[in-house]
Amino acid sequence: MSIQKMNDRIHLDQRVLHMPWFVQQFIDYKRPDLSPSTLLEYIRDYESFFGWLRAEGLSQAASLSEITLLDLETLHMDSIVGFRLHLTTRAEGTNSKVTVSRKLSALRSLFHYLSQIAEDENFYPLLKRNVMAKVEIKRIHKPKDTAAKLKGKILEEDELLEFIGYIYEGYGRDVEANKQAYYSFQLNRERDACIASLILNSGLRVSEVVNLNVDDLDVNNKLLYVYRKGNNDETFKTPVYFREQAKDDLSLYLGLRQSRYKTPKREKALFIALPNGTQEGKRMTKRAIQEMIIKYAKRFGKPYLTVHKLRHSFATDYYLQNDIYKTKEQLGHASTETTEVYAHLTDKTMSEAIERRLEN
Image (cartoon, rainbow, N blue to C red):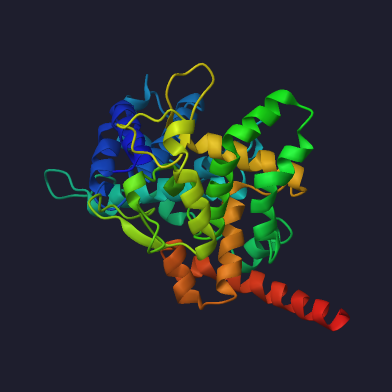
C-alpha cells in the first residue's frame, strides 16, 4: 500500500467515527470500490454540509454524529439551493464550480444509497424521500475547455529538454550570488533534475513519484512499478514505461542517493531529502516536490508551470506520437474521455508547428 493511501486510511478511520451511523454504513459500503483518499473527501464534504445544517437551524443535533435521517428526509429544495449559495458566496474562501459540483455529487451519492440501496429491518429504504434526486449536477470539465486553460502553461517540444537542462545548470548561474540557494542547488540538482525528467518522460503523478521505492525501478528495461490512482488492488503495482532520456538521469541520481543524502539502508524510498539539522535522509514529501518544481519554473520563465503540468507536458508530447488508447494506458486514466484533453492540445500544437515551418 502506498504511503499516501496508508495516511488517508488512518485519517478516514478517525474522522468517520464522528459521523452519523448511516454515513459510517455508507462509507463501509463504498470501501471496496473507492480509495481512502476519495472517501476522506466524502467525509470532509459531509462535515461541511452537516455543519451548515446545524448553523442554519435545519437540524437540532448537538453534534455531527447526532444528525438524523429525518433531518435529511425533511429537507426542501430551497435548503439545497441555500447550501449551494453558501458554498459559492461565503466570505471566507468561496468554492470553485468544480468544488461545488464535487460536494453536491458526494451528497447525491449518500442520498442515493440511503434511499435506493440501504434497508431497515423491515426491508424499507432508510430514506423515504430523496431531495438530492432533484438536483442537476452539470458537467464542469469539458476536454476542449481544459485544453484551452492549459495552453501556454505547459512545456512544449524542445522546452522539455531545456527545462531539465536548466535545473542541471541554468538555475545555479541565476542564484550563484545567493550562498544558501546555491548550496541547496549544488546538493540537490541531480535529484531535482531526475524527478523532473522522470515525470516529463513517463507522465507519473506526483503521488506516484513520492511513493516510488528503489526496488520499484528497473532501469535496464526502462520500467517503473507504481500503485495507480483508483486501483484498489493493494497487492498489484502497474508497470509504467519511461523514455530513454530519463534512464541516464536516474542512473546519475542513484549513484549518489545513499552517500549524499546519508540514506539509511532501511529507507526504501527512491527520492530522498536531507532536512537541515537531520542526521539521515528520508522520503521526500509531495509538498516538497511541488514547491521544488515551482521554484525552478519561476526562474525558467514559466511561472504557471507546476508539477502536475509537467505530467500534462509529457502527455501532450506523447500523444503527438501515439494514439489516444496508448496515451490513456501510459497515464493511468480511467477512461479516454479524460485523455481527450491532449487531442485538443495537440491540434493546436501541430497547427503552430506547421506555421513555424512555413515561416522558415
